[in-house]
Length: 78
Image (cartoon, rainbow, N blue to C red; front, side, top):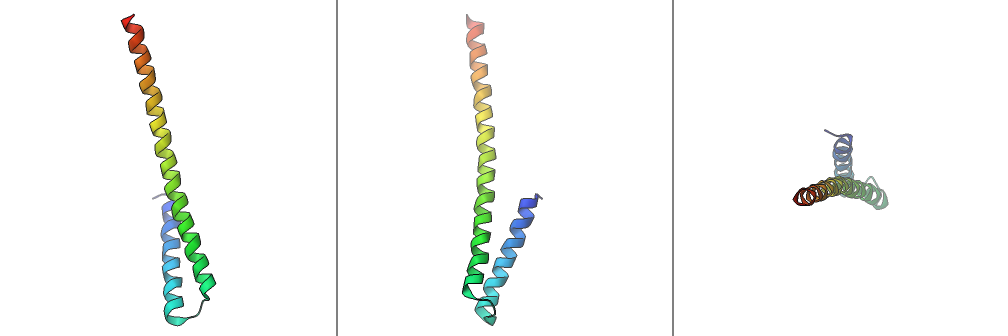
């Protein structure tokens, strides 16, 4: 597991726990609970975007390799 996955699991558990704590025991304020939920959702989105960035970089590299292959194929025909 990556460190991002571990942090994501911990933040999710903390946000669920604080939401339940707010709903049933009314110990935290609504703003504190909302802040923890927002931080969790922002981290989830950042994690997804970093994964998307990695996939886009791999796609770009594959297109570069494909272009090189086409150029070599054209040179061989001439």
